[in-house]
Length: 285
Image (tube, helix red, strand yellow):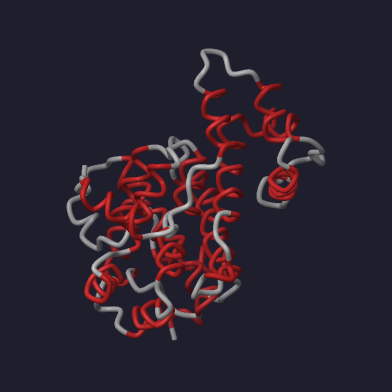
């Protein structure tokens, strides 16, 4: 396990506008920690936040979940996708509300669209290829993996230029570019946010290391490598969809990701067509 020095975390807490864990999430975690969590109490706590409740119902009634009937309240949502699934959706909704777009140097609407789509696709692909792993882990990893980006963008007016530069210099890991320019990188900040929001420790570790192109060098069959592989595949798919180019890390991890996922190139091309509406021929040009 990669350990972040406490002094680094202290610097982050002092130097960046990191969103504090919301009271609603604290309340939910306390309720979930009980020996027999009370579904009614959990549903009531969530329902008090009208905006979050509306966002959850919209997501659950989307084609992503493919439910046979319309879910009309939070208690019904808990019954359909479970307490942990609903809490992950609450966490995601609260995360998005924690950043003020007026004080951010990147387009937050585009950013959340991109990461939300990664989270949604990760749930589908994770369920399809790694069903032994709890699906909410794929969702939380997809949504939170880049949560350090808006924190950086709240502090640095030129951060969009750094992100753009990462696309034009794909031979360098984005974290390397960030460290050279700012002395910090978004994965360490993302780890801090995810840990303070009490995401699962293994998810926090992948957030910290998700730009490490050597992460899959020695395959060990671990759940951590499964999570990493699914995330990198979904990043690649959404990069093709929105940017019409492979993700910057993809050429360096593609072979090992496909091995971990146990998929061949034909299956990869089918996934590209399914999730991006880009034909296999287009990606090979």
